[in-house]
Length: 261
Image 1 (spheres, rainbow, N blue to C red):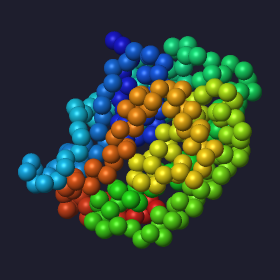
Image 2 (image 1 turned 90 degrees about the vertical axis):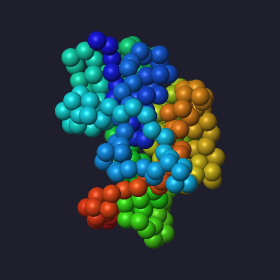
Image 3 (image 1 turned 180 degrees about the horizontal axis):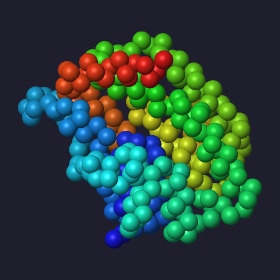
């Protein structure tokens, strides 16, 4: 039994694993999971309704629950061995498949820099960037009304602070976070920062240093693979065509609003 990866490419951590595995020619079976699958969200508009229907594919959501004890994606299954959590999976793959050293360097100081960024990332970039999707797409989808512009502005201000720290503390004048070659730190960062882009918040537009770093990351993993992995998030607004069960809306709307307080 070979390697299986249960992934939803709307998820930033899933995209980082997908890109890492593909760019390193790691053989795996892609188990496509849809976190917002029809059985949870409700029915799509009927054919002929005039609404463009979201892209969909075969889903393995139930299978992912069996693979990961935490019942979430990303999830790895390698024979009888199972593993959850993005960083753990990335490190497992890099070690098992002996990927090029630049991804997670053997040099103790360079490796420490990767670890440093991965630790900082969760409370900073990851704490702000995903909220743009909730504000502009998901919460309006469930509540039926847009959020005040002040809420988005508040999130963007927090993200701007994190981006300033990212450029000054981590990127500096280097090609990549730890030097002249891409690492897991760059990969984890870029997939997170594509989340705002997908909902129309181009955080790269007025940041030339950040924009050039993004271009180098795309080139390092391959532009075709990069945009293949991000196709769903760059078309995230198609989710607005999904019809949500009114009872589910009533249950989830207050929960989602609390997430942004």
